[in-house]
Structure formats: structure tokens, C-alpha cells
Image 1 (cartoon, one colour):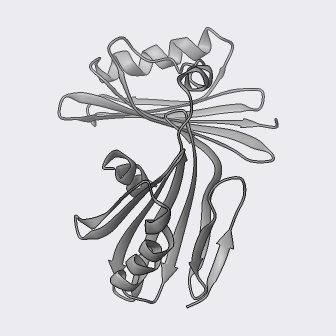
Image 2 (cartoon, rainbow, N blue to C red):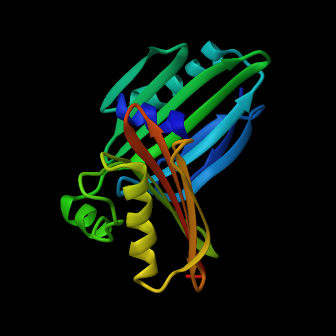
Length: 224
């Protein structure tokens, strides 16, 4: 997942995965795992896959280049940190593939992100996640399946570890959430907090790195 997000920031027969979105084809020899079929990254709809295969990095790169390049309004393919990265703009979609060479083949992270209007983006993002004063949201990923909704956020906070921890503890307690577990270890520079309310569950971890507190929050809501 981390590699897919980095690709977004940097702008033979086949198996097919199709919907209203662009059709994605994968090599028949590949093992394809759906990471997320209905998710949002920073409010934008996104689908992601992990693909493993025995073929070489360049063979896999050529497979996607042949599939995407002629359909692209904008196209880019290059090496980046040892991986081969492909970006294909097929409005309103951005298709990406990051191909990593392994000792016995390749692992490819494939993603499609859909551009949406500012109005729709504002509507999606209106459900703001609480954050300490001065904190910055680094990433916000939302996913949904038949039985639950999930949301994972990464934030950085200029507040102290203790202040950040107690901010979330108070915030959820004041709204009727039950504390399942809570650990604050200022000596180790770490803290964890788990709280629930009915079928809602949230896990929050805190770590100090380079004088900043990094917060990872995972929220799951059972049932739709």
C-alpha cells in the first residue's frame, strides 16, 4: 500500500478486471490479489491490486506499457529507487504500476485513481477526523466492503506525546466511547489507545520521531 501512495505522489494472454472503471489486464501467469476494490485516498476513489509473477521487471513493464500507452493522454515510464514506475493519465483516471524486482520474479503494485469534482471532494471530506491543534493529515484512506467501513489516517502533531494522547482520549470519552485499552509510555516515546462505541472500533498508536509525534488511527465500523 505504501508503494502505491508513493507512485501517486510522483506522478502472453491475460486476465481482465473490468467495471465502469478502465479495464485492467494482467498476465495469465500472474497471481493477482485485490487490495482494495472500493476505497478513497485523500477523498479520491481508488482501486488497488498486488500482482506477483516469475517474469522479469522489464517484461512486466512492457506488458503494462503496451496495454496503456496508446490510450493515454499523458504517459510516463521510468526507473525510481530501483523500481520501474508507470503512470498513465486516461481522464478522469490515473493508472499506475510500480514494479519491484525480487529474487524469484516481480511484485507489482497497480492502482487506479479517479479524479472527481471539487464539489464531490468537499462532500466526501466533510467528515473531518479530529486532530490536535497544529496537526497535519499525511494520508487518509477509506475503504468499504459488504460488512464494514474502514478508515486509516496518518497524522503528524507538533504537540507532545502526552498532549496528543490525552487529546484523543478525552475527545472520544466525551462522546461516550468506552476505553478498551490505553498505554502511555513517555520514556519509550510511544502510546496506544483503543476505544469502542457499539460496533465502532478505533485503534490509535503514537510514536515520536525527530521531535514530532506521528499518529496512526484505524477506525472500523461494522455493518452498513
